Image (cartoon, rainbow, N blue to C red):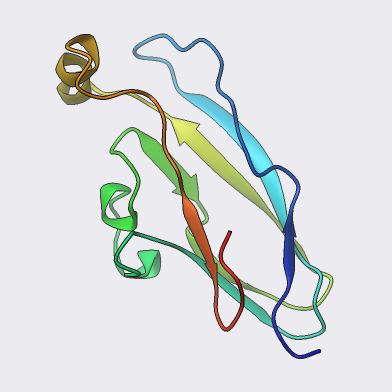
Length: 117
């Protein structure tokens, strides 16, 4: 089959208890399990691709979430480690303290010509 296929080691990353000012990072691995080249990118809710921006919020992430790499290309059988970091900065603290937002996020991983994660 020529449709790109991939596997994520973890579909959900939990950061547990978090303290303001800390940087917490969780890692997972993306594997190309298909028989064709896999092009991936994190996208925002409108489908805009992340590789054209340096801002996490522009890829549909809150400003306190950072993803690396945001896009890439994998040959069949190749793997890439993905790092998702949580780093709350002073501008976000007021909204968190006022309970206007929470430290929850859903990230969309798009596979070109394949299914989304």
